[in-house]
Length: 326
Image (cartoon, rainbow, N blue to C red):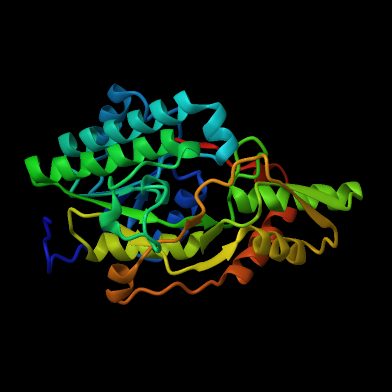
């Protein structure tokens, strides 16, 4: 493992580019970076389409950030992954390849590539440690996205080895929160549940369908905690190996549904469609490396759900979020 200990990288006063700033994670990073004294750079898609190499290289050459958070991605839940595999693979491969090459060419000093917990094997030992990468088959329902995330990790490692670039990879657990995507065709489990429950409430319906058996366990971390961990690691971590961002609460999908219903004030009944896929049976990340550095999350699952439900009910058109944060 290539480690560079004792190399702090404070963001105060630096030009920092957040790629994908309109997505849930990118928006949370903007909120957190606003407290650091960094000069934050963003770009609309009309200015630079990160899937286009020439546009990406020109923009980074012109603006010359010192640090980049690579939070841009085409994202979604099981349905979106299953029905749009080409988009999930091509978009995410193109984005991360273009960003890493352009950052290298323009002399960016530090880059954080964002991995995903789905890049770990489907049946990895739980909680999943960083050294589980590429030790077994991927979960079929999100393999397209996972392959692109693995490519991002390997690109960061390759540029680090060949060119000495300080490119690191952070792997957040399942995230949720303000700014999430609530589009039924593209959302992850928490926003999908909130959307279904509030729609049922508005329509006077007393049942809501949930995909799968309700038995899988998932760990959830509020997005503002994740953004805080990302800034923490950008300033303190320099290693070739990925580092997990976790420390949230593990819960079954069935219990999660009950918590969402309680926060939204809905008193109906959930119907589980066992013919639909469950995805990975359990997914939680082992985060002793990050926690050992002194970082801790602050917002629990119930408080995070309360904030997310409240935002969704007040946000109007913004609540559909953005499935393609590029």
